[in-house]
Length: 488
Image (cartoon, rainbow, N blue to C red):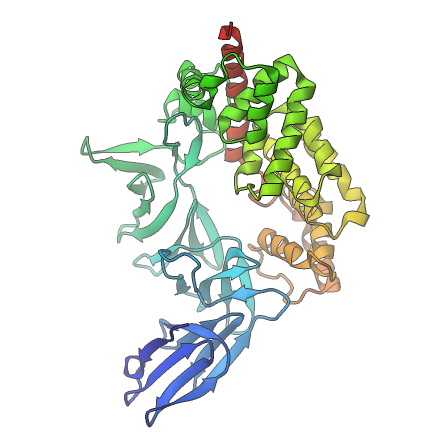
């Protein structure tokens, strides 16, 4: 690893001092020789607002204090990469900042998941988002961009700012997506500007979002990410129908768009397909066209359609083809698939069970969720990854037993203890009094204090994603019926 070099005179030293950090530690040069100051593995320096020099490494944070390095260690029970070394060559540099209450915040990798870590001078904490960019206004208030989310820091609490939703780009696209925010600026007047990956620069002012249309040279108002946009929303009817979960008649434009996407894609060879051909298309699972083929086959042979669904899930898990949104895509197969998914959730391999549980969670169907949560009674399965997922769903649905299971898993040694700890850290991130140690007694006392006022927590059942799934279930089924009516 190449060391990072910093000239000491930039840090108010009275003489030129060159220091470096590397996998061998923090070093300084003396008489043309390198002297090791600390033997931790570091790769990044940062100068704080108060002139304090920090060094970041894997699980260690060091501060130059009174001429010597003071080292703070997070602990070995959870892997923490504070160094900011990116696995992606063109990723932006890691974000490090201080809030007005003198806390140090920085992007970190914890159990291979992006988090923001807080250090208050004594102890470490974490929150569930990964900061990509940070800025402040004239009063020193901090604002952070985190991909699909925006936050402001107010009196020790992170508050989420409503973000815009727009129609997903691309041929055949028929869903609403939240824009991916890469950078943020705040003007002296408090207006927020964000840079996005596909939609240019957006502006947030007076509680409303708008964007500059470069072709029309004017600002266009767009919606905010709410569960149900109000009647005065400026979204076009098709986008509003998707965002509200498919309430009311399906817009003809959406039906036609999805229909054309199917018959102009792989579906053009399947207009007069046999049951076996549709089955193969489902198992291959390349895009929403496979879901349309599933709905077509359900109308002919429901048993074969669900056998094909099971084979598809097996193939995805065996090939490593499960992506971040695969569960959401499978959720679009609708109620006809629930029994099959529930069976896989109870009897499949570890990966198959996780995927089936994720898929059912995105439907937010009360009966399916309740049947899933019945599996929590089987504590012989406690140290399994799918059980962690079940506990997460229970917490997202406001079930107290979900928190009890997360606490037990996070404080009990086992294969997935770290996974339980990550989930528990996420759902308690807004609390300032969480225990510093993974002690069952301390966490049980903490839960007894807060359980009476507990509210459903977590993004696992995000209303916007759930609404999109519900809408697409209706849309895809209608398109399938339209194709079936014309196949002869």
